[in-house]
Image 1 (cartoon, rainbow, N blue to C red):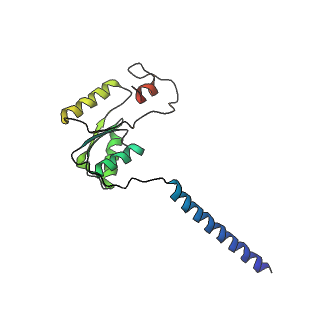
Image 2 (cartoon, rainbow, N blue to C red):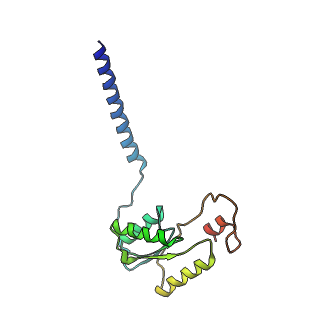
Length: 156
């Protein structure tokens, strides 16, 4: 009798595991949303992406590069930008079409300098992705230009 009870518990655990696994699988499929799968060529296009060294910015750069665009990766920290470029190359991107430029949105002189670098090298920008931003900055702080950090980084 005791062995039968243990067997029933085991079957119950296995059944719960299978049901939860199936529910998780279908929930992920359902909530994943639509995926863009169309193959579009961006060959010959110049793209500029701010906040390009991580997260959505990094994935945006990857997608543009795989579509054959030349991508300027605007980053605050050049070291992190270089690491992102290596990571992108490992993910199959063509590093000859990835250009890292330092651009701190909290410093207008940095933005001007970066814009001038791009204008020297390119006739036009075809795609601009304003991805970088500041959220939940821990305290009120002014930029070198005298504006509140979040306001300047996200809007000005």
